[in-house]
Length: 224
Image 1 (tube, rainbow, N blue to C red):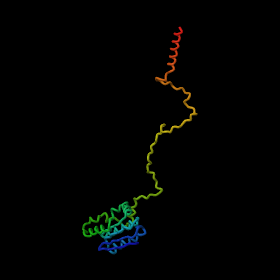
Image 2 (cartoon, helix red, strand yellow; image 1 turned 30 degrees about the horizontal axis):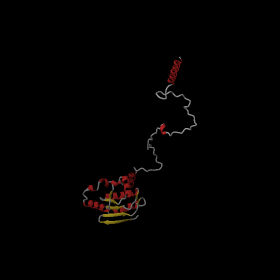
Image 3 (tube, one colour; image 1 turned 90 degrees about the horizontal axis):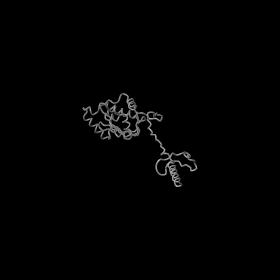
Image 4 (cartoon, rainbow, N blue to C red; image 1 turned 90 degrees about the vertical axis):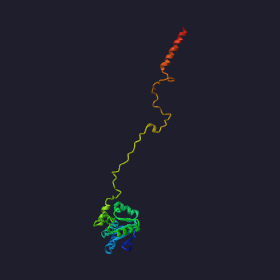
């Protein structure tokens, strides 16, 4: 594991020079934190994670060790340079509201100096953050990550509702007209069509018969 340690008075700046904070790095990182805090009495840690791209539950456990150990010595661990991917995971677990996270080293130094100059004000370090971690930080990490579902390929999707599809009522006018062959017989051919009522060409047969009768009577009168 690659890292650098810089000490300024009571402040210890620990910079992790690794891109992954996972199970391959976390155990050694925990040991380094314990040595700095317990053996050397460094109660104010500034932990620079600006090079870390990936973190898992083991890495989060290492962060909690630093948080818990410094809180037990009336100090705290400030985390700086956290990238968006790591921050998103901390938000999912709710740790972004529990850990001390700052945008820069200078901001963290200013906060630590404020706490050091006024140790009597207990509100500067909230009780909720001081009593965060239980005896086993790995158990806490598992509890925090327990609520995050794991998406797999065989996950059932029975709860998904299918959208309703509107039925289209096709009417005759929507159907394309078919061309009939002239040679094909018309089904209506040979059927007697009802006489049309009205004036003009559509006169009834009775009118024609009356005209014929009247003409016949006129012819008889002339012959007499």
